[in-house]
Image (cartoon, rainbow, N blue to C red; front, side, top):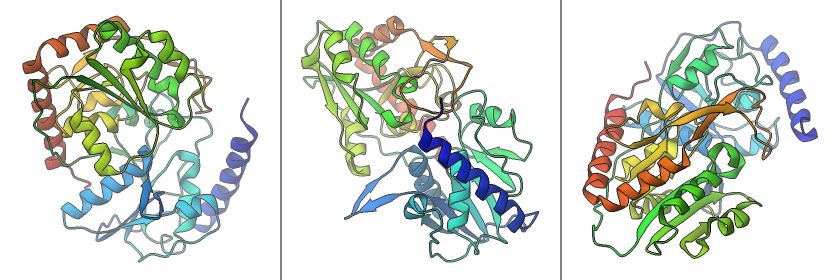
Length: 375
């Protein structure tokens, strides 16, 4: 059953959508990127910035436009997201790109009206399963096209929407670090936001894979960088049988702190069941960290057997009781925990292989960066 809060938000979204569909011109203006407004919610207080994957993507896209010499403004609508009728002051753009989930599009759009009324409008949406949620609105009349982060996400959105859909991936500046091959600990990192569904991120599976590889090796350390409250986490750690080897880091980190965490880790592990893109995977690769991840969904646009260790998975029915995410019926991946554990052991025992995968990961991240285009 849909939670009351989500139901109220859905009703508000549909009402606002109906109003905007009448208010906005039937067609956006000409497709012009002379001045671009990238619209997203980036919460900042006392100099501290808190970003989820969607807002992080907005920041990265604004930076990508800047590198190409485009006049771009990152319009932060965090406050408007909490107060839907609030207008956000900004210099008008010729194009607006809205980074949000489907139901939030109308809030972002409302926050930049009337300036965006006659501009070219684009929704930047991503979805991690083969079919989008039923409560996502039809963007026809609100935007002229959809951008998304991966071919997997594009196929999902194409199953429902008729407007043009283009893949415009996230890109990250590469800054690999030099790692010592003789350091005392072997450091495995897991990065997940429980608000994005701990079940989909499969934190439990990652803990099991680590325990299967290193339960008897006290020199191996697992760092769980998690956002949000996860009530089952203490039990999962206890059941793993090596609680002294597992560190939980649940505070928000700055971009520099996250970069340092990636750089100090030997391996990033992701036992995800589905990813629209897998931004943290690309961030780790850009920092020169070897990656072990599930062989399914959006991450396969930039990961393959030459630059990472991909773990085979079988498709199973979706079961997720941790968060309402609109998943409904369908299937997602169940990665092979035993193979993931074996992959971790191989990387532990073969520093040269880690270096090789890390170098190729950096090359792939650099390739995405150098070929990024929005046209």
